[in-house]
Length: 196
Figure (cartoon, rainbow, N blue to C red):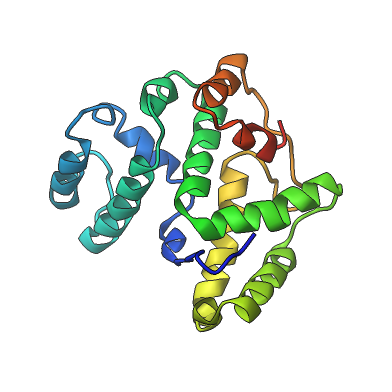
């Protein structure tokens, strides 16, 4: 999965799938000026409700990254999905945005699911150890950063309904229209990646 051009970053430690944060912005998320409105939100805190400005700016930075990776019409479909589908949709954006989350999902999570195995911090740490041996930059990251990434990746899986803290689960309440959207945007890899 890892090649010489894969570039990992640790920005995913900013906060899981950010479900509440995206939901709080539903009134403006389809606005053509959404990115500019997020710059205003970083100062005004009218929607997101994160009282500390430095934390708010960090979260907004990651929201903008994920927003930029959303395929055509994602947000117009997102607003009609049920809560389970919305959470999975936000996990999809994490896979699209963060190469490290993508790698862990395919190299650890999906393989464990196919083998009927549980998932724990050790499984993720083993992959991090492999990546450290293949990537000098990744290998230089602080232990606390690696720990936070391990926690956040498993939290994102839990928030997306794919994990209960021990076992990997098939997501519930996923409708035909949700699956059809990913078919329409040529992203069916995601449907099979999340055990559907």
